[in-house]
Length: 442
Image (cartoon, rainbow, N blue to C red; front, side, top):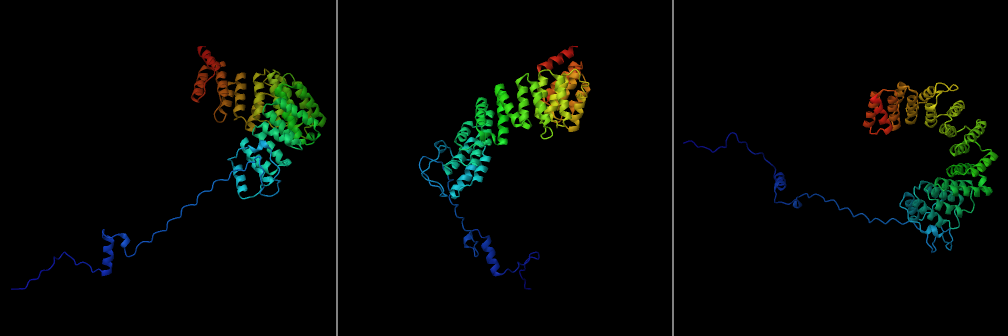
């Protein structure tokens, strides 16, 4: 009987020979019962980060009190005390306050240029008061003139006229810019009587009239107050002072023209001032504001021919025209009966000038052109001027265009313009709606 052997099936293959060390590593890796901490090559744990140091509280801006303080620079007398009105200034949370706190924490005394730079960046009265308190603590004997002028200007720019007046009264020596800043602060704050009273004090002080720039600013401010308060007596005295000093030019001349134009019935005086300014045209160019004020005053008093003459002289003088003067003269041409030609100047020429200067797309100029052509019955020209306006036309342009169509009997176009105006988010006026309704019934 033959010997038989138990052999493995043909399809089965023998397992590969694995080294003993490799089998041990694989068993340790796949066995769930073995913890990773007992592995042969445990992973290195990263050291924990130390906690951040506690944040130091921001040092407060030192506010002067009634007690004596010591100066970090050692250049201040500890027996002197700052003024009591600056001791109660609240600490500022602005960038200027942060800079001063940092300087105090580092025991670094700020210089004058730093104070001036910080005051120039202040945007509120509290910030100016905080910086002023810091300056007063270091200069108990009195602020230097540049710092005093800057503090005064900062208070005036923020609208605090009371604080500005306190600084002004404490200045041992006032220059022309200090006087002008205080007069302008009163005028801007609508304290016109105070502005005129302070200007009178300035004229009595000889040092206040030595600074040409300061005198010019003060004159412009007091003339504005005279026009708002209706004080013609003082304005005539200021006019005489200006003529005496030969300053009838530039902004001062424009302020005089505006004064006489706003007073009513004094356009002749405005023309005289403008003539004096034209005599100095070779030295100083006559500002556009003077011409525009006179044109507007003549238009208000129905002196249309005279207003056109003023604009013609303005164009002959080579004064650059802006949207203000162009819109003003277009309103004059809209009501002028002699619009076809007036001494070589007409509305179509002004329109050509606006196209040349690229001003026909302006809202104000475009409204003036539409209104002028609508009043003259030139509906096609009015439509072209309306389409040339860039951006979103205002309600005045829409009303002028719709009224032009309604008065011309073209009710379909007027109705379409009214609905387009509503679609643009603007409500038509009652006059425009009534005119369109009347045109529809015709």
